[in-house]
Amino acid sequence: MELPTFSPDARSLDLRNKKLTSLPVEVTRLTNLTRLDLSKNQLTSLPAEFTRLTNLISLDLSDNQLTSLPAELTRLTNLTELDLRENQLTSVPAEFTRLMNLSGLYLSRNPLRSVPIEVTRLTKLTSLYLSGTQLMSVPPEITRLTNLTTLFLSNNQLTSLPTELARMTSLISLYLDDNQLTILPPGFAQLRNLTGLDLGNNQLTSLSEITRLTNLTSLRQRNR
Image 1 (spheres, one colour):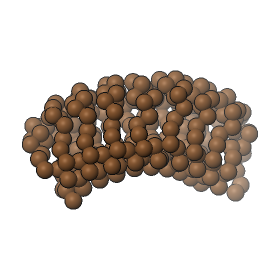
Image 2: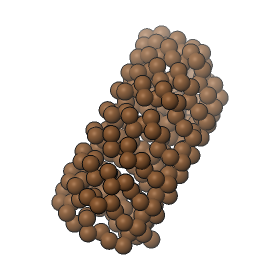
Image 3: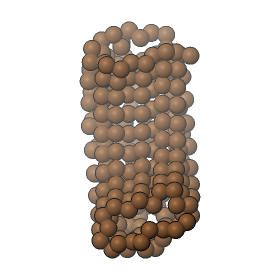
């Protein structure tokens, strides 16, 4: 696959779907980059030199073959958007909490099995995608994310939600479809800013809490 010519002053670089198995060293020298798209490749790891790209604001690593993230990645503290969907990640490094400027984090379709506790400390997050990550529970600590407006928890193995979820009153869109929920937590109706709610394909027996969510404009609730 032929790669584009790299301009040393480039601010944005699109290398998606280039069949890359490793990152060209030339890319790590483009220190002016603010946006980098490496999606739809065959990357299994990232080189240490990657941390030279300290001006990155948006990084797309989705649809690769990453099994882990180097701790050095967390030196990219200017990142506001990080897309890691469709990899093979089972965890994130402890240093992940350094990425305090993240507003959008996309982890869907990774075999995480649990919500990384490090993620719950990224308090500037407004969007968090955790669909298809084999979750069996949601930790109460997720309520630290007081700025979260969009939360995707679809296609997991959730049977219940923490009562603390009711504190996340900034939520506007909440996706809980394709789980095994039988009941909504007490106080769910306190999520009064919700405009979009997807509860489809669960096993809910009562939806009384939903009737008090007066701002809803989109509701999907069909059970299995």
